[in-house]
Image 1 (cartoon, rainbow, N blue to C red):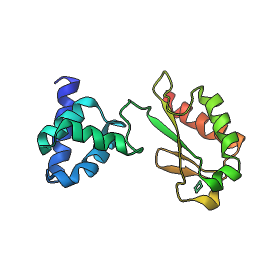
Image 2 (image 1 turned 180 degrees about the vertical axis):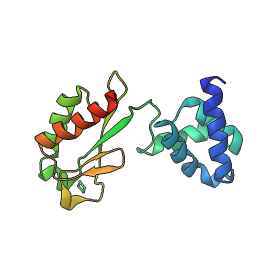
Image 3 (image 1 turned 180 degrees about the horizontal axis):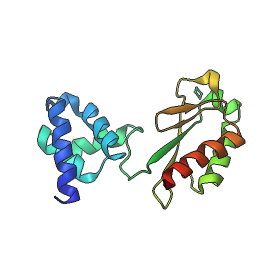
Length: 160
Ligand code: FES
């Protein structure tokens, strides 16, 4: 089975799980992104076909929400909160440190596809600011040292 077939098969499975109704498109896209870490073109095509939604409409929804990515992303998604509370507690310095540690800018992915960096608005944990969310894990009261520690750990884990 080719990669494209795999993506299409997995997408059909996801559409089926949600019942196939047009109103479930966002939930379907969320699951596709969870499965592949982004929304592959083949998956959008397969979802549109299976749900009887024009591809242009699927793209419209996929590009409307910031949470969706049409570009391949790394194994670990690093999100730096740039909301007001985190901003006043030094989020910009954390972003700068993260950019230097990973050697990428927000919106980019490392060459080894291990990390993607993103900036986001308030993630709802203002009391813990500045906050960095890595995959689904929240890291509060971030400092330069914590950035080194947390990224170092993931890099080590990545080599195992
Ligand atoms: S502003 Fe960062 S969690 Fe609210």
